[in-house]
Length: 212
Ligand SMILES: N[C@@H](CCC(=O)N[C@@H](CS)C(=O)NCC(=O)O)C(=O)O
Image (cartoon, rainbow, N blue to C red; front, side):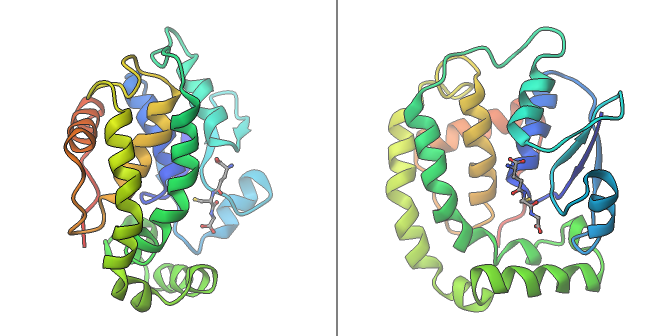
């Protein structure tokens, strides 16, 4: 299986963490941000992640990829899901974006390894999300907006190694968002959220992204 991905991409991390939990090898290929051609050649549009299965068929939806990888051999994501966790994740994405988007280009990530790729990201994302310097200058405000949700998550976590007590799709909804949020230096995760994040990252063998 080959995953075309960006290092910063939380949807990609859903698939990567599932493969890691399954101890399945995933050939990870980081695409440069300005390499739209590779995406088009694979699936006819600009989108990441793309999972190309061993039979050569490409998948486009991250949760379909997660279900597919989980279903190879014995599944590991077997626990019940809670609708409040999915609702939490849906709500929190938009609150993390003003904090994470203006930081990703500063982290030295491989998708921004050339000046052209970095500028490609800056130009497109600025149009979509606003001026990055201004967003970063308002970090305290955006952290303040996010904290009540992190406190709520703290109350929802049942165990450090599975948000609902047994690993489930809800872990795939939440862990990648926390990985993204931790690029914000100065963001203090509530205790159970921090324990959950650190335990899960250690379980799957991934280091957090750098924080700025
Ligand atoms: N529903 C799709 C959404 C994929 C998606 O929105 N990907 C974004 C975020 S990585 C993307 O392709 N962005 C292209 C870009 O950055 O220009 C999934 O869950 O995989």
